[in-house]
Image (tube, rainbow, N blue to C red):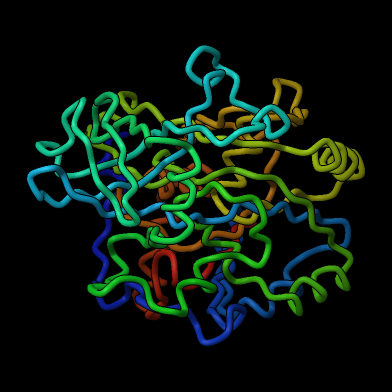
Length: 361
């Protein structure tokens, strides 16, 4: 398969610019991946499609205001998207820094930045609040390491002057709207570190969670800090050439234990989102056991992948030719997903981050 096998034409007016008035009012397309049968409903009806004993696993990452704007000494404008802090341990070991070891905020961050001509190594960037930083190195592919004058000033800059990094297909010429501050976060969001929302989780409300539990299903959490690995486009027609950028992930002991118990009892693991799916599949052993702990999630899921953990998937509708479309195609089959997307387009479902949802089971 090549990248062209995952193309479809999407009318631009179907790209959602604002969320549904209420989170669980978004439409829900339910796909039976074995029969191909489709059911058209709304997210608030999700509990009726679950089973007693199901375990929904959600991603509790929180989007940080990681988009910053600065200027060079000559006045050139620069835009920076902070991806993740770089602790000394992260630079010398493959294992990421666990929260217990991160006692101090680092001054150096991995970031995406533009324009490249103004982000040469050694160049100083001045940000709001008289905060300065130096481009420490160029990492390639639009990535840089940026070192602030001190860690405290960098954190204050993000907290006071950073913008929520909405995807470019959500048009905000004057910056994020007030509604984006809350609606581009899930109700589970509690662990800061993401630069994009785990969008399937945006549909949940407290009332919906209560209905899920009343149905006899449970909720468990993990954390995957959504980074460039989730949204950067595939640049080669040959899928084998793509290397998935690793993202920081932690699966609590309690979540891993509950997954084992549910699996042993014959229940289903319902992943809320592709980020949750990648976290679980990255942590799965050859014996289908999910390992707890902190790791880098770098699993590139394409058709042919053997799913070891996830039995059902709640997700939004994704971009043509994206790693996310490849993942859902791996879960339900390329032809079936493309046919389902064609039906969703015909019925005017809304696509992408603020769009409607799809349950594949």
